[in-house]
Image (cartoon, rainbow, N blue to C red):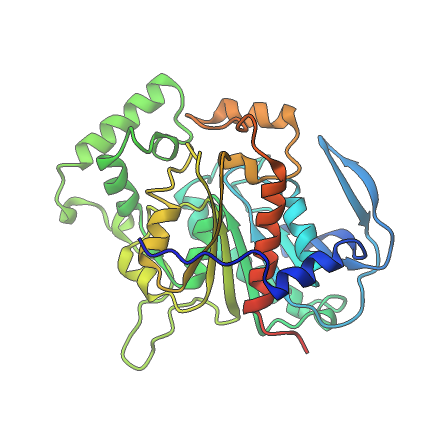
Length: 360
């Protein structure tokens, strides 16, 4: 497997670290049409601890943003997620000079999971593009943003968002084939949303039946490709939106993507993994992406960390509730050193500093 590891102590990362003590972090709620978006951005207003549900964030709500032209990074949360558990990463990016937009994905968030899975995966890239388009037209935010080079970060199911916007193709057929071959090895992924006995048993039957079906028997909606464009002679571009210039992924869903489309990705993609992930087994997901994507870089692998150990803040009460919904691997790993998570967040900021040309 080809893996390049980006050194953590790059000049860009040193710059990020030097700014941490001085930058302030603002937050505002905004709408891109009907889509709720949390904006996190640099401000001169002093940030203070704020209680938001089970979360405590050090932030300046509704503070005036710093003037200037900033690069934008759009963050795509995981299944049943929300913007707040990724606040520490968003704040790190803000301290590096970026504005961060965090859409709450329709039908796949902490309040509404009716579209979780492939139905949401199909919608997410368009939602990210809609956020960029809406910001470009907003009287307040458009003058503060240079949207010619935009970054995207995706965690877990948000990894589908990021890879699709980078130009890769996924299909439900790839999911079915993968889970027909590895239903127990990758149970955390294959039976997500079907933890109880009857639901899991029915899904096992579906996967087992699909193992013996030839491809032509599957309905067209199962075989349909989603994500990037198919390259044609004279039209090599595979990205749905050419403003997307760099992508980072944390413990991404990867098994649903075709290997040839991963190989066609031409923009830089940075990946953060963990070595104790039982929700998305690395050998099928993050490692699989790295094995086929020629422009992908392994930023770091967090030792002794599980799938949700990347989230911060992650209150113990909420962690326990989420773990109860997982087939396996939902609880934080005992003994994990959170300073490793902070280093991973800084490596993501460094990656974007290196791969998004400076705003003018």
